[in-house]
Amino acid sequence: MIFDILTLFPEMFTSFLATSIMGRAVRRGILQVRCYAIRDFAKGKHRVTDDVPYGGGSGMVMKPEPLVEGIRFVRERGPEAPVILLSPQGVPFVQKTAWELAQQARVILVCGRYEGVDERVRLLAVDREISVGDFVLTGGELAAMAVVDASARLVPGVLGDDQSPLEETFSAGLLEYPQYTRPREYMQHHVPDVLLSGDHKRIADWRRQQSLERTRTRRPELMDGTAPPEEERKRLDEERPRS
Ligand code: 4GY
Image 1 (tube, rainbow, N blue to C red):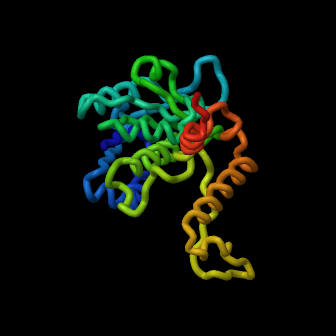
Image 2 (cartoon, protein in one colour):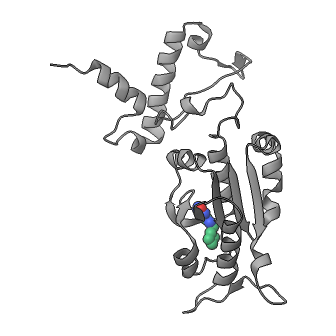
Image 3 (cartoon, protein in one colour):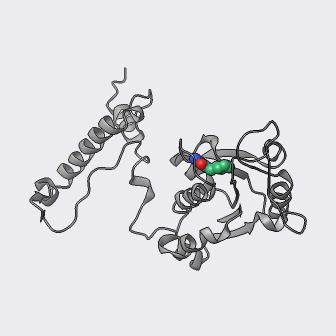
């Protein structure tokens, strides 16, 4: 999978792409990430990328020309790819979005800075706009890294064979259950006995109960929907009386 990223600060991505799971995927060639400096597409001696907002107000706005020019350049260098702008005005990025992007051969991410991006960039050069959360960052770079990380780890071969993204939080539509490792007792807190029982059925039941309870108390909106989580739906369907 290829990510092409347009940013004013390509150096922000260096350690992210060199470290841990992402670093290994890049070295193996399963993941390819190319960063392009928006400033390289700005004209004039000073290569200015921002300007004052029409209508007044504080802060600066990203000029349209360097962004539109940069996006055109990147699009021409590779297979067809959706152009995605990261901003708080975007459609919420959720696990389902990550699965969807992980199917793409290439994705182009555009990182804004300052107070915003000239509206004509969206109109002329952007296919979709996504937000990683209801907060305001100083730039789209951290959001882009979140999108790359969450999507790339779903590409076959990126995670080790012992880690499956299919049985984790949000895949089941519920929050993850509590996890423990050694030591058995730490600061007077014991690992729950059930996890030492060796009874796989009891362990699975306990974990599901914990997931349900955790979701109910922390994220009730994940449960108040009409659709029950996938796993529960299957079970309910099997138990359904048929006439
Ligand atoms: N939240 N989700 C986000 C963000 C910074 C002004 C446009 C977010 O995705 N991006 O806060 N981005 C803004 C800063 C220009 C990007």
